[in-house]
Length: 101
Image (cartoon, rainbow, N blue to C red; front, side, top):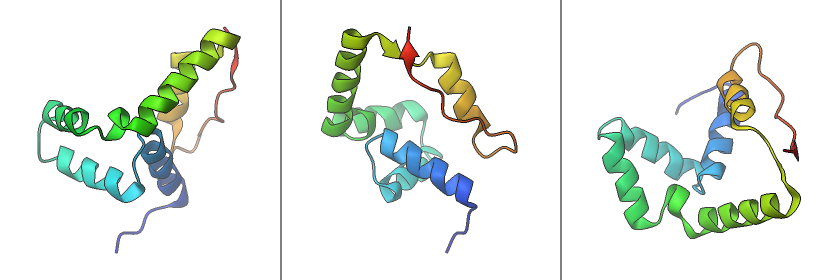
């Protein structure tokens, strides 16, 4: 059994969901990536239609792009990156808010 803190568990679950994977599949992919070059792992996922290339992830991407094109609302990348980098730290940032760009 592996024990982790709640903040780390939440971050892992969010990342798995963002990639269109179950938590178990996401963690298995992470473990495999440590044993193989990242490019090979990404190519295998693309070829298999998993992770960011899964039908569900691609459909979500298409919905997100269509919504942005319609509303002009989004979140700048630097704000998302800063938020993600704060995960699991004592100064974890709140999720950035969508706004008109």
